Amino acid sequence: MRVPLLDLSGQLGPIREEILAEITRVMDSSMYILGPDVAKFEKNVAAYCQAKRGIGVASGTDALLCALMGLGIGPGDKVLTSSYTFFATMGSILRLGATPVFADIDPQTYNIDPEKIRAILSQGDTAIKAIIPVHLYGQCAAMDEIMAIAAQYGLPVVEDAAQAIGACFPVAEEGAVRWQRAGSFGAAGCFSFFPTKNLGGMGDGGMITVQDEAFAEDLDVIRVHGGKPKYYHGVLGGNFRLDAIQAAILDVKLRYLPDWHRGRRKNAQAYESLFKDTGLLEKGLVTLPQAVYQKFADHPVDGPDYHIYNQYVIRVQDRDALRDYLTDHEVGAEIYYPVPLHRQECLVKTGWQGPALPETDRAAAETLALPIFPELSWEMLEFVVAQVMGFYQGRGMI
Ligand SMILES: Cc1ncc(COP(=O)(O)O)c(C=O)c1O
Image (cartoon, rainbow, N blue to C red; front, side, top):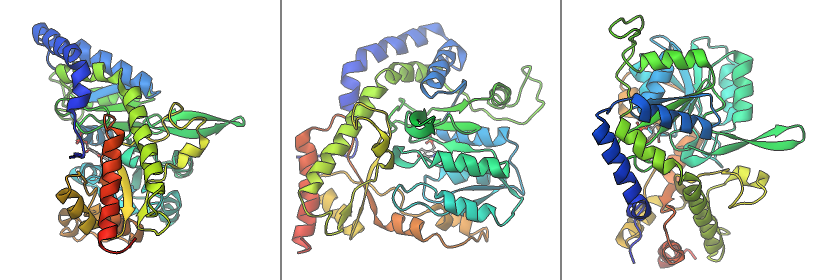
């Protein structure tokens, strides 16, 4: 048996004709950039994400860049974020001439630790102008605490929700729990439609979700080189526009997204029951991802999307050797992310310095993503777990 990390062909099969019809329709319309298809998709994503407005952009990276430009981030400013994330989170800060400040992560969720944010802000550095929490792997950062801290210090929050479209965070309200979606908490939510995301295009794409109309208007203009009216540039922007064909494809896929999320959660539950029988968890050789908000959900699979499992990331002993073993045994496994941002050469060589981030370093050394895409069969999941078991058995560790 062979189990790849991700295989998109199973997802495409049932919706192939629907998507081909949309591609043909847009092709015949001659409207290829922005236009009615992008506007329709923006409306649908905003509604799904519980936001007032959606601004379609060319990638998740451009979503972050455009949002930070809209907040006026520039040289001399600092932005507080996580070091344990994809490069784009920091890249958008550096490209504006600003400097990242990193808070360490919570070792359970791998998301930025609110207490670490609080500790940094309490030092009174007034150059810090924004906070970017990352909803890593498909689970929201602790948005209740982060929003409260941000309000205390008067800082805008830009959610890096690239991996987390649809992920819900439980908000306590009048004795009950209300589930609020990623991208609806901060000044802006930044999404990626890179093909490996739960909502993935057939190329690059992204979206910014916004609650404030005036800010949405600003971003609308920044997205088209800051031109309003056309050819009159009151502010600096960029070419951050979304293609109509991508929007039309993604709009079809958006209708299936809740089913795909459920499929991934079901697979996560299957891993849980399979790993429980191995003894690997008790021995501390494998630690499964902690879906910390699951405990608030009425029903783990049909209930709220407390985790959308864009990646299923386990913490393991002898990570690199296990990864090689899985590759040799035809199981796709990937390391997200081997080098945390505070150790990236392009930052270090600028002379940047910051405090130690022990949990970030430990996660970068110990974590491994296993296949989780919705179309995996029970037999495939069993095979993956059997290979992990085989690795530790072969080393006499279990
Ligand atoms: C956490 C995070 N931020 C930002 C991005 C950037 O998105 P894109 O690849 O669409 O530019 C990604 C995508 O991989 C991501 O995972």
